[in-house]
Length: 623
Image (cartoon, rainbow, N blue to C red):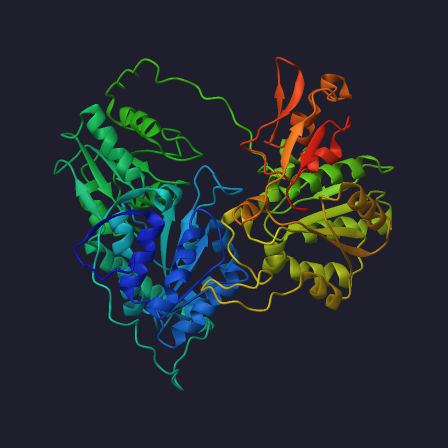
């Protein structure tokens, strides 16, 4: 990754290609908050930052990351901010203001969109943000382009003194391909003192210069080397593709044998569009198929361009359903769309290719403390006079709204919203709402966006209980550090921030419990639910996956078949269905519970919950 070996060919993941591109650009500053599918980018940058003499941080949230990059830019630093689509929404205010005042050193935002929401709650399309803020957006397809487009984006940013967004998607982030390395600079970009007349101030009169920059970018993009065309000189049928759509289109064209009649226009300059370059291929076309993820952004802009130039072109894509309106592109749905464009019959499927895989429901990892938390919460809230309300948040515990958490959530909006939604309900308890209100957040989310909401709820004395699920890591995205872990992205040890002391300073009652101590913690939850005002309970138990990576003696867990009541325990397959841990399974021949020794992590909580006392634990360390 850090070898200065220009011309060497390496197999790289897309996220690795982004890192290599940043090194070749000579970055000075990198900041991010972890979010899949691009979490690995800052993680890798943090490990090599000291070696390459630049600064990298896991910021408390995306706003902190973005605004720190703006500050670095003022000293002529090349600054890289990495977010996912949800994070780009978080920085909208800073982004739109930054677009008006511009930059000094290059400022590039890598935003990773997640079509089909593999590790997200939505399929939000980042391209709208670039269009709204009037800043350029580039979208690479191959791993080579992903690496090469980062230095280009920094050079472009400095030349037009504007923020540049590079948009990647899940398949680009996690895909792999050969990359030819470029040279590494001897040192990062030279810093400059902030001059008395350096100005990066957002004021209304900067709006016009911002639009002038956009016009200049549109002219430059007419000859951008990352745009490509293949096919006949004057195609009647044209495919315009961005991102992974370009690769699937090439495969579909070859599969259907229509390369002599269909043109493929691949666009990396998604905004602003190189209009003359596009028109040169679209003027003679009768039909245009647009391939993109997630929304028909490019398609609608092409329709507007054709309308302004009075082209009688029929458009196919996501808008008319030729391409599925939700989810990822793939070889099959793109081939079907190209078949609709050309009228060429789809090739017959090979025998056995229609094999349907069983649906696999998401669940918590074996030994996850969140399983115990939501088991307890559901049990406690059901036993209230009126079943209590549980408000969710985003993290591993998002699965608590599904079977893994006994469908515990009534509402889950966006990251950090749980405390505010619960505050609204908690205030209504003063006006006749006779229900207990509980909300949850993780330790990383607490620092990210919960703190302002906690201040607000405490200040207004809402009747509610906040559970901080402290598993000692940003577990969902790969165990990145946060202010409570005592570690930075660059490996420096710092004093960890104590969540309990922070809560006390705000003026809120706080207690700490262990979700694995089932009976004791259940009693604490019941007591706090009946205490008026704003209450906080920190449920502290390390992530089981994190613990398993450390040297620790694992307990042996097994089922005493003589004690196991099977279905007679009062609940059909209690261990595997009610508790739901992957380590607890069922022997259908004996109709008895059993433990999977491979999956089980030896936490032993199931033994505390077994109605018959059949689950035995031996050895290991106390949790």
